[in-house]
Image 1: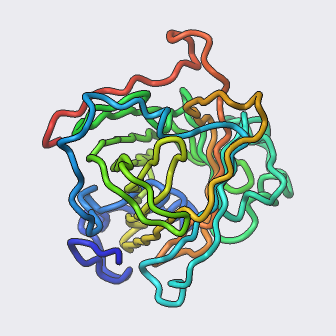
Image 2: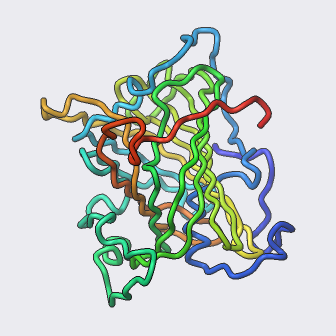
Length: 326
């Protein structure tokens, strides 16, 4: 059972940080909700203690992410907020050389987002775009990153927190530019833990805490995304607890869901034996349920090719250590 150390009041409670802010649209509010968990990032579910005495000095995350193009992961998702949504729902994730997609977006025709996003200056207004068809449903948004955002650092030491920050540009469902800002991602390796899933028991999984904060210019809203992720060596993500929380104008929102692995289908193509850490240049999000308890229906990452040089404009950002207490 997922629980929080504190209670989030219903959506109609005003947050003091937002009373003086205005100018938020409902669409943007939900969009940035993809960013966060815990009003101040301190939210934690009730979790077992992790083992730390057996940890190696440093872990190469590539061995645990199992990011092999051609792989598929099947999960069951349960929602912790809405009893009506407590019944497990099947969710699939697919990784290719150029994309990573999960949920209801997997079976839809996927446009090349980077080519159909409208210019930030003097954009044309189309009647309907391939993006709108791809993201048809509830609230949706697209963000582009400069440079491409790296999902995880290459390696991580036990108890260590590292952070990356990149520029982001926010677009609506139709690909029109809205605003810009930054996205900050912090990853902490908490320890080792065994995990029981419908796919079986996985021993010695890495447990990561991943906090993502989206900061957009001149928008009266804030949001965080906090994920607790369990990675099994050679398999990848076997469990995830995902918390979205924030506020739009004066209204609070929050949503929590849990994902457990049902089946992992490794790549069968011998040419896809290489592993890589995806770097995301564009991401799309579609909510299955909106306010006040948002629930992610699907997401899509358009991946960047490997950077040719560390000092190139397309080079991955640098992960910096975070001092304890910050």
